[in-house]
Image (cartoon, rainbow, N blue to C red):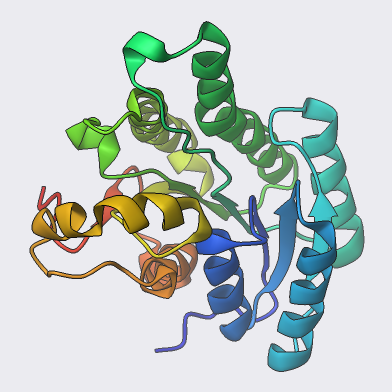
Length: 253
């Protein structure tokens, strides 16, 4: 299926590794130009950007930026527009997943997780919406959430689950606001994936996770990235406000 993404421009936050890197590759494979936003591991992100550009014949650029810093976000949008002349897609993927039970959780850790996983999504989405409205352009915003947004957490990630639950309802609210302007806002809820973020958890508890997944296996990030690419495409123009379950059956909602 042709997703008609050739020549379109996407920003993927946290695009240098894990699910973000898989999303960047699938989007470039479909012909999109991708801004790979990153905050760590600069050398490898630059190499990855060059690899994608050379392999798929698109133009990828890496751009540093803290998604909780308004100036960084404004700079990413400005530079992306200068370089490509258009921005069509935003994938709010960047996030953190620290482990701490509530009884041991510092106020500072709670605030940091909420700021990155929830507030950062709001800040970037608001600016991309205003960019699109100023240009009277259509666009797609896809937010990466989690099955934990619906199930909560029993393994020390209450702050993460709370933030992702907030992103789900933010997705619905923003989708309602901007639908009349041709801007679609959706979310994707992955389950457990084989990514650097989840490496330690899987090493300790993979069998426990497998028992919770009806399909009986851990996802490859590309399997989630395909759903993101679909939502970014014109094939999903009639979908907005929805959260798509890509959990191997953990949700079935």
